Structure formats: structure tokens, C-alpha cells
Length: 245
Image (cartoon, rainbow, N blue to C red):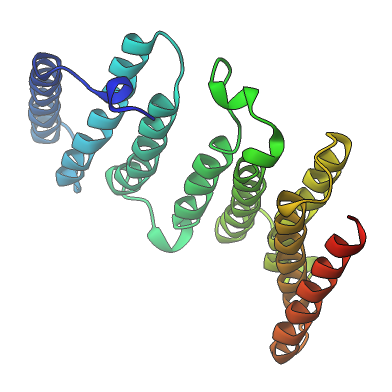
């Protein structure tokens, strides 16, 4: 991502800051007035200041979008960073119980990682073969696994559903999601005609790591066997690569 695509003129930054601080001060004053004349109580008013970097991230995304004329990497990363901070601000502003709502701090970052797992329309990255942008599908599948983990904890904390009714080690299932994604990515590499090169080998090895960790955790197997299993798996991957040539 070039500096040209993310640079925001100084005058635009000044205008953005003035608008935000004006709105912020009006909002704080209005809330204090509301608490004086009604039964409304606003405990965590200071959390409004957490919205400062949120506004900065979202406004940066808007200016970058206007500058490039499309939804670029800079826009996506700015929105993602703003969403994570916004989650913290909302929890404080609504005075939510952190012991119940903390899984949002897993779910939202997981969504941001998931969203970054896809190349954007109109980007030059789409013209590159899958073997040269292999990290994208892995980000997507890993983000999906983190989202599933956060959703499971959130459902449990809010009393919606207890995943432990299915398995005490249910939290290991999201670890297997990137492993399943790795298998699908391997098939995509195979059918794309990339052959069994470094991309396929690294993809396969990462798949084995996630699968081994997830299965050991899910079945409660002794963690001491994990290292030798991974060593054996690495050897098998290397051998498969040799015989596939």
C-alpha cells in the first residue's frame, strides 16, 4: 500500500478534527443537561473520548476512499481498526458487564481478520496466482475460527447457549476451522495447476499444525505428543514434495 493512497491533506485533517471535537463537546454537554433535568444517569461519560481514534479511523477511511475512488486496502484497514476501538467504547458507554461481554473483544477482531482474508475487487493482487497470495485465505479461515470462538464464549456468557453441552473442549473446534480451510486451499492450489511447490508444502504444513493442535485439544490428548507428531508431519510433507517432483 503506497503512501500516496493513504495520505490525507493537512487541511482536511484539521477540518475533520474541528468537526469531531465540536460534535463531541455538544454531545457531552447535552448528556450532562439531560442528567440534570431527568432521571438519566451517565456514568462513563469519559468513554466518549475513546471515540476520538474511532472517528479518526473512520474519517481516514472516507478520505482514502474519496482519493482513490474505490474501496482499497487503506479503507479496509482504517475501518477495521476503528471497529475494534469502537467495541471498547460501546461497552464502556453502555456500562455493560465486562465479565459477560468480553467475548466481543475476540469476535470483532476475528471479523476484522476475516474481512482481510479476501483480495479486493479492482486490486492488482487479484491478477497474481493463488500461490503468491496464499496468506489471504489463511487470514480468512483463521479469522472465521476466531469469530466462532468469540461467538461461542458470548453465547455462553449471555446464557443463550452453553457450547459445553456438546463437548467440554468445544473451544478446540474453532482451531480446526483453519485446518479445514487449509485442505480447501490445497485443493484450489492443485486444480490451479501450481503443482506441489513451496506454496503447497507450506500450506500443507500449516494445515497439519492447526489440525494437530485442534485434535489434541478437543480429545484431551497429552500435549507431550504434539511436538513429535509435528516433526513426523514435517518429514512427511518433505517426502511428499520429493516424490511429487
